[in-house]
Image (cartoon, rainbow, N blue to C red):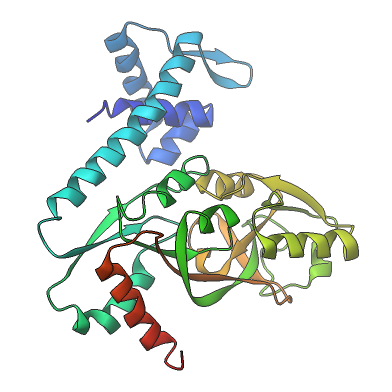
Length: 299
């Protein structure tokens, strides 16, 4: 629904390099440059210029970059909504899926509960883990999809949806493969002395805030660097391209091939579970109650 060369343009703008953009897109630098030349010719605009620090955007390029991000997001939502609408005539549960919040755990639940919903089908709806747009996605529960399944200790998220906890994931740390800690099978908190630990800024997650306060009070040799309130791939990339340590989760060990995840000898963990609309359909609530019977039989 939009010019696919905009994907390449955004990658170049984000990376500041044709070569790095090519690596992200799994194409050659020559192909990237050809696409950028073609896009500038098609638009009759100069979008990029070489700077001492790499590829920069012209004034026109900055405008196209801003609007292209909006167009891409709107197009993805439009297609997802259209696909969901196509299935409305069926008895269907729409399930959101993303890199950090994959639908696989939901599928495991579905195989346990599906006997009670023999006429139902599942429709997976992909969405992006974008730290600037994730709250909009959570707000689409009940519209774009019926369920998400993922980690949740966010006050902002819980203001927008219902949450059925199903278990917990341990908090770990991740480092680049070249980092001095990368060869460790597990570490103590003291092993982080002298390191910079990347973690979400305070105020939204009580568990993260408790961990932060523990580190500030008892482990002052560990420097803390704030990340955006919600993780997306840019946070993992930043860690992989630096010598810093990233606070992560055991369920995210395979998210970035350039990072190694390491257990820490602490008791910190975060709940994961089923997210659904505050004003969900009756059959959604019926599914949730069935999951409660299966996973919480004493309640």
